[in-house]
Image 1 (cartoon, rainbow, N blue to C red):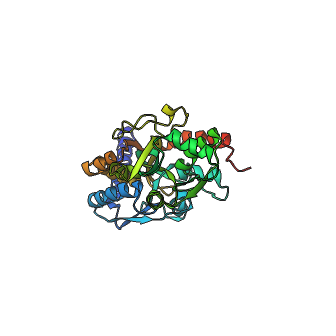
Image 2 (spheres, rainbow, N blue to C red):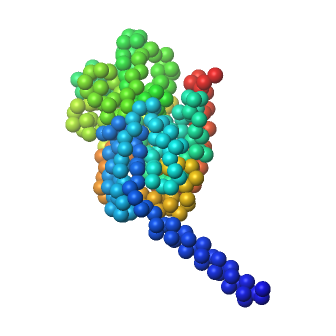
Length: 322
């Protein structure tokens, strides 16, 4: 084969490869996409992803159907992905619990790095401590002082055992030597309903509380982020109160392991565009959530580092299984 013929053959092969990739992208999707939200309906992750699902449905020409699978500390979505075909038609909201729970529960056999396809990081979640508006505690130090003076009397809630919100508050409790009762719920919305209904005394939750704080139904005592929340500039961070607990909790979109990169690109492009649309940006602003867009490889790399940090944190808190 002469040089000219060889070059022509290579060019033809490259063209066929590009055409195949383009065909895969053009072909997908051909049917509705299932988007699992591993929390009960009504929380911040659910609200944001429903906005994204509606926009992506229009962009891709196929329905993106939201399915809530709350409970089990938020890992039901990750477990569903292990049984799903890697064809892009089953996706899930990613959160820190899906990364952390296999460290806490040896019965969970999925690897949070190897057994998920990372598609796009979208945001981070603002966590805070809230009480009912009529509660006697005006500040977090007042709440902690009451807990210390009344061991075992306070009940508090989060969206699940081993969740970011749970561990953040347990770190405070352990540092202060407090005794109280944690009540896990199926999602942020359920936790806040329990708080408003008087089932619990306070909640450590992500910023689904923001509208209720704005409406005067709840009081925000402190936030776990490194900086104060923009809409609540008078509310201190936990670190400002002398407690070295800072929580930045990333969230995004993942799929089953082994997805076709061409399909991943279609989904990432659609969700990235949807995430930047005014309706979604305004939703994030209402909850003081930042827009943090990272493509799949960068998202996976960040979660790989975070997994080791989580392992070390759980070890220090003596929460790793023996």
